Image (cartoon, rainbow over all chains, first blue to last red; front, side):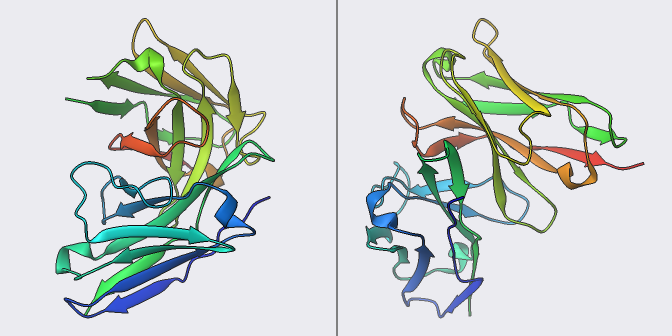
Length: 108
Length: 121
């Protein structure tokens, strides 16, 4: 089965840039989606199809995808960005959706 | 207002059954694929199942295949998850989620608030 690997945690100071990676075999050939989840809340879509943003999501959230790694970048990090972040792809070989292991972003 | 509201969660003994519902409003329910996603306490997201817009295609995670059944009633704008032979490891918050567009591999743009299922004797 397809596996997506994320770092367990990322720490960043306010105003700086956070980069969250999502590793998978040839993930660059897939469309990657990213979700933000705050404690006790449902996930929220922040980036879809590698780099598109839903309406209402700040431009500070951006994504890229190439080779074996997709990346979610949060620029000018704010305290409100502190949350868990998950990547997701559709694995067509198994007809399964796959979520990454999740990354906890801590704002120092 | 686009909204998904889950119901049907609760405490159930191992081996028993439970049916979850997800009521949709604010969009054309019959035009979109729908998913169930679960999250065990303190753990990450786990995809459970998907059903196509017309119910003709269904796919399941290996962990639930043969025990869970996803279905929908487009006349009632409602998604279901029938869960049989429940196990302790099925304990989780269960979310329903809507496809962003109308094809497999779409992102999930709308999520419900979740319903808790606890499997315990």
